[in-house]
Amino acid sequence: MIGETFCPARKTVMPKLKPETQQARRERILDAAEVCFARAGFHRCTMQDICKEAGISAGALYVYFASKEDLIAGIVERDRAKLAAELADLSKAPDLLSALARLGEHYAVEEPQYKRVLGIEIGGESTRNPNVAATFRSVDAYCRQSFEQVFERARQDGKIKPQDDSGTLSEVVSLIGDGLFWRRAVDPAFDIHKVLPVLVRMVSTLLNPIDPAVAGAVLTPPAAAADTSERSEASS
Amino acid sequence: MIGETFCPARKTVMPKLKPETQQARRERILDAAEVCFARAGFHRCTMQDICKEAGISAGALYVYFASKEDLIAGIVERDRAKLAAELADLSKAPDLLSALARLGEHYAVEEPQYKRVLGIEIGGESTRNPNVAATFRSVDAYCRQSFEQVFERARQDGKIKPQDDSGTLSEVVSLIGDGLFWRRAVDPAFDIHKVLPVLVRMVSTLLNPIDPAVAGAVLTPPAAAADTSERSEASS
DNA sequence: GGAAACAAAACGAATGGCCGTTTTGTTTGT
DNA sequence: ACAAACAAAACGGCCATTCGTTTTGTTTCC
Image (tube, rainbow over all chains, first blue to last red; front, side, top):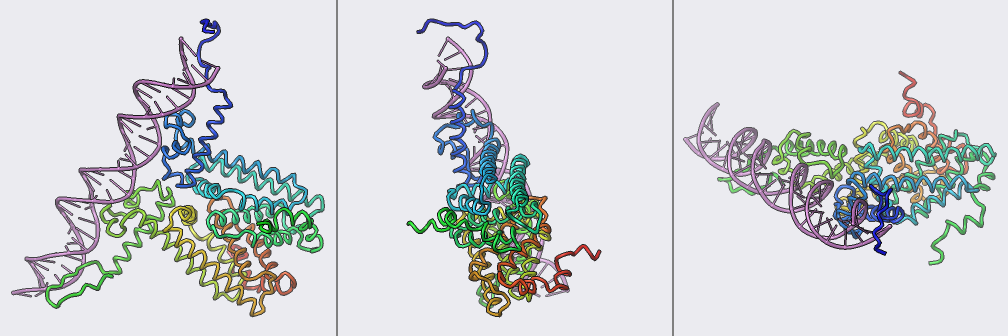
């Protein structure tokens, strides 16, 4: 076994962790950093905090991230990438409005509190850190474009008859999403189920201002709506 | 707390700055701190930065604020108090919807950027600093109550016929306000004039879902609306 | 009225602790 | 066997706060 293999073609760098384990470590560090950053903000959170949370040493951390700045950038990229991915699924949804409502539900209810707080932290950081700003804005723009395309297709399919152009619709819906996100992050007593139906109704009048019958049709595929979002508290 | 030293007729000495100048200094420091905090965040901003911005020395600053924490609390209180005051004026407005639109216009256009960024900073801080959280939430609650009262009165006066209760209406409108605020703070390219009319229309259908004629009446006292907000660039 | 008296206000260099990062020596994976 | 991965301790800079001193403004006493 020990048989002294000196390989001829072997010279410089190679032995390492398997790239997958390497990636796993990175993710783990990011997970820990997310928690810490949300708990204390990007600032007051120390590298030592993150090390402790991740169960590693400072030396190890610096193998994977060159600096705190770099770590922050990593957090932002991962978080925003996930957001973009989840929003991309939206375009596949058959029912536009209930898909939107489900999205709101998802972000405002299922996501743990610390992720929402992290979102605020990211937005704030984007106003002063050009690096963060770049990824933040690009994802933001992508999301609004997605919305816009969805609306545009729905209109061409005759499913909606909005009086505004798709770009404006997308802006308005994004804005409502931002409001949900902010309120939910900042006010622990916020009850999304109180407002979600109203928001849906409101948006539906936007999409079909003329004919309430059509709006109703888009709004309520009755069975699905009842199951998914409207009353998840009935069971408990 | 200032002029009150008890003085036996003879010996008493209590020279000081006139309370008004004292207050002025405090305000000046708060102004400087606002700028610095917005520029760098509560964290990365140093006390020396603030001193430089205010044109005073460290020692002087600590005469007026016991600690950085204390200074942050001061900022939050002043900012929120102003918000509450401005919102209180709303109840006096004769035309509800255009008053709301004007409010949105005010916060999203006239307010300088750094104040918006400061708002994010405050919200973020409120998720972890109990002191900040207390004033933040109390003002937040006050604002929503104001909205609620305004809506309730409008309903009783027969000006609106909403199908939702005033509490819910207030939540929804607040949420839209939050969305405006966030978007405007975070996205410098955001054009509020693209969405404001749509938002107004949307809210108006909320307030008067049944009878579009009434809704139209509330929405457009035509002369006033044109002058105040809709197209301030037409005249010039 | 004006100067002495005195404390608040302001200054600004010094301090002490904290935190991001580096260095050093050991372990581990291949 | 050898470099990458890691832990642990150490370093160096920065920053909130303090403190001894100076300045400023008000009162008191002649």
